[in-house]
Image (cartoon, rainbow, N blue to C red; front, side):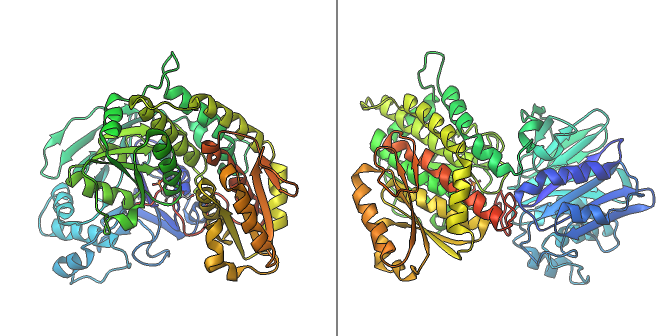
Length: 600
Ligand code: F6R
């Protein structure tokens, strides 16, 4: 969603800010802007659309070494040039960018700003007007900033510049991520280290309720009451190459191809030198003591949770419930006596999941976060974290993070089985190694996937995915992948459920992608395929070696039945990719979507 960058140093800031914003494009946005402090005042450039559109309106002749920038994903007010950030105060002295949502903006407007006519429909403008109002009443800028922050209810990461002070960026955060970055003779702020990796890898994490005053030489952190806090920077381990496409046309394809390496990396990270699983002892004890596990997640991570339930129940013998975070927060089921909450989140910043975590923390329940972003909000606020080790995932459609989530869940389940002295019939680590090899074989068959996408999906307006048991959950993920990037209406169904209503939608040529990787239900799912074919559907069966029959459209290599989702999802990802490509869609940045969904 929204992104923030800020730079104060010696170099021309425009290109640094624009480059930084380009690195945040993957998070999803609909407009962008920068503000720079030039010799003759603050210059603001903003535009609806892509950073390329913003670049076309930035005046090359303006030079400045101090500025802030923003990518906006609309919440309050339509995507437009007027609503794009930065926003300015009435006199234009103060200029501000903001991520998050100010819940009490109407009240604040009524209480303090009724004398002003506002330029935009945003909640953000309220903040900058409030700061100026307090300064006009005699407060220093820093005091006015802190006073305004104390009045805000909601989430924010903010960067502020003052036309009368060419030496300072003020920034603050509450529930939205923000980092301050250190350099030699310059300093930066960014909502994501990726944005400023080109200038520094030294970052200081800011905490909720803190203000940071950034000059060319210093970064000073204070509480909202003005007490100075000391914090050492950390080195951001991200490799600049990890966030470049290299020779790939799209990040999504690069990330699909990375999956075998990610699985091997996870196996390496979660084993010691003797090949024994090395999960933290406190995680082990939390799993062992739980009488029921509640998995909370959204979207693709929720789908990984559904597979995780199978792993944990079948291997570690602990009952598991999987819940969509946005529903759970107000519709909590009866909880067991000693629950453990597992939050699955690629970004670690998803507001819906965090809202549940805040509640379960208040209730005193233990929480474990599985995330690709250790140090993220969900990681910091949970008792324990298991990293996904997938490397940065840039494409909006999640691929390698999903398979990484399943792999870590499998390892967690196996480890818990060991701790509980439950004997397993197979060596899961060896099986994961077979999975990685099978993934490689699949990513080598892209031509075939492109052909399937062309044959079944090039003109259709809808598509169904069916499966039984664990295949059903992969079908849900296949449908989500297809709809989010190709805009084809796609739904995943349990094979047996279709005839209870949805089969009415089957017409001549309706594509139905059926998964058949589970021996126990192989005949039943094939029966469901016959039912839809009898009504004109164009069925595409994807089966597993050993269960294949004549006429199956694609056969995936044999892996352990329980682990098939890690492999069978790859054709789903590739078919979706090609369907989107054939339809001319923006594969990496699908419309309306954001990579990190930081609003509820
Ligand atoms: C779909 C996708 C989303 C996310 C969801 C949760 O490809 O990426 O459905 O899975 O927004 O995000 P995280 O995992 O960051 O909590």
